[in-house]
Length: 599
Image (tube, rainbow, N blue to C red; front, side, top):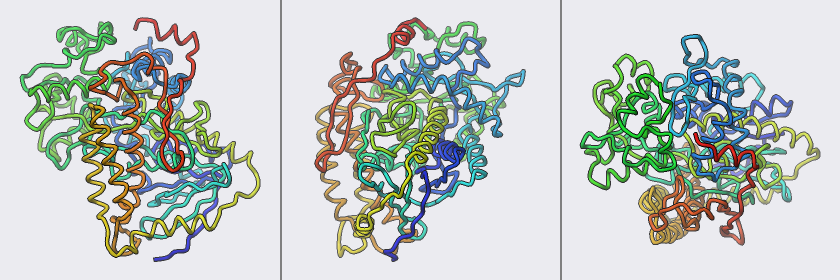
């Protein structure tokens, strides 16, 4: 196994090739700088593809009353007011332009009868706002961005995992990585780095996330000295597949409910009417009859409770299952066939139809689906400047799920794809400007690289040791059991103790074979970031003594106004992780008035 390394040099490197990474790379290249795009898997294999329902943007094509102010208000309310208001403002204002830009680049959207981009309903959005392509919107977005990116002269480094960011003094100066297909090390020298690595879902046992989502970007930023915020807020998407076991956790798009699907318990009841929070009741259909009228003719623009924000729906499903009213396999029923004809379902939701038919032998045009909460998204991430995407470390930027602030304590469905476009573009633009402004040669310390290489190879040299798969499995079960939808102080403290023991065991992992295509080695290296983000999430959840959005404490069941004014901030200190409570940015008076208005 080679212990030397190759060197690549770019003005800007982008780590992650999903929607945020591709959009950042495109924008940076447009500024005339050299760009390297690093992806852990193959180009096009990104979690953006899983965002099936649509891109949230106030185009006003279905409801002319919609505008960026309403979108801003929905986002802030959905996040329980813990959002960075400036990020929410920029997101709502710029999302329509980013969607139209995608269209100019060749994206094919579903259309209204008069030829405009069609928009569908989604949870927490007052108006039908999601531009979509059936239930394959993320796939179309990746296809469009990828086709556009490859014509910009961007160097793509596939099957490459970044293990550590490199610094010259206080500045980021590149990254140390390895090629998964060869086992070789590579040093990327760069004046600016954009993290677009996605989330942390593989720290939980039941998740919609694929193997890549091991919290790499969150950990890289923390290790480099950046701040993380809001790591306690983990979104459990209310509707993942629960049967058969081989596909448990795979996402069922919110578009099913947006197109008329309803949630029912084993008594056939539409149970969501029991769980309408007072905050939403004024704008929600209060009876099933009113919800039926809303679906059939849209004459009253009020919400059905099946489309409440995801945190509310996930907790309601969890409550029904605990009360013994769940489906046979531990979920609830999602029924669209009672409302929509087969041709409509196959046209509007082709992926969902084929997914259930092929993987679960369920025909959703005839039978309801069994669904339940699955770990899906983390609202927390790298603390960034709202306008530029810059972290607290010079030269380091972040965009997409790895960046915190926009979504507050709970993300509305559809806001993820527009987040990627809006802030991917901004991070790429400002990273390029930063790189242009910082001339001179950056110094990469060879001894640091040698030390990182030795550390990465250590699992091969141990005569005996721990199995990395066993540690990963125990971590996932620990997080699922103790840091899930409902948390308590005793269980969180138990989780912290378990994570500490797993960290000790991870330092003794052993793997065999060579570096090329060695999944055991890959897992051993991923453990570092998985354990780091699990610890961050658990520590932050213990610190926040209230329930808000994606964080529910059984021992503190209500939202506390004082906690609604602060972020929980995590940063490295003396080899460990330190926590601090720091105030949210002040909300301007004009937005205070807007958020206080009735819907």
